[in-house]
Image 1 (cartoon, rainbow, N blue to C red):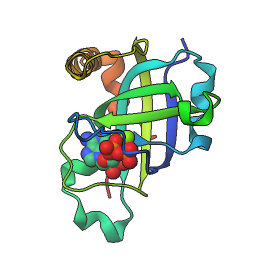
Image 2 (image 1 turned 90 degrees about the horizontal axis):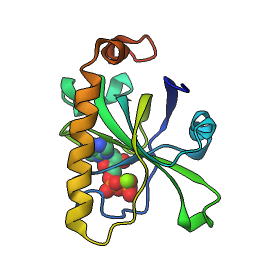
Image 3 (image 1 turned 90 degrees about the vertical axis):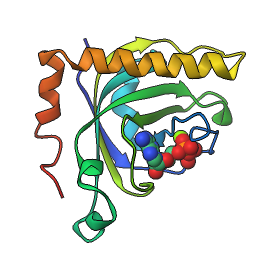
Length: 159
Ligand code: ADP
Ligand code: MG
């Protein structure tokens, strides 16, 4: 198994392809930080943990919960904008943030694969699948073997 896979980088602006409209904003990792995922050729949806790291001077803009290690689902896909030559990793953290965190460092540990990427004909079908993915992720992360990564020293102990 290629897991766990450790990823980190500053959150980039995406194309604003409606992540927020779907109730599912996805924070994009920069290209260079996706290299560890190249060993996993499968595009699709993954689960694991993620953490937003705030510099001490900005910590007061977040709530303490915003900076915790939180469950996430990640979509790994070939970006059509770059003629499908570039992999994109987008992370949805299962938490309601007080504010956006573009430009901040995000760390993630990818622990498992949920499903391949599908072509959706309806918005409803896509939303249904995202909701299902979140439940699968939360269920999987209940297992002690996965849960222990929440305490991994790769994450910071707080701001
Ligand atoms: P973009 O195309 O720029 O990625 P999105 O609609 O996908 O736009 O929104 C992603 C941004 O929303 C993230 O970069 C982050 O700053 C913010 N955000 C707020 N809440 C979350 C969350 N729970 N998970 C991921 N990103 C979030
Ligand atoms: Mg996004």
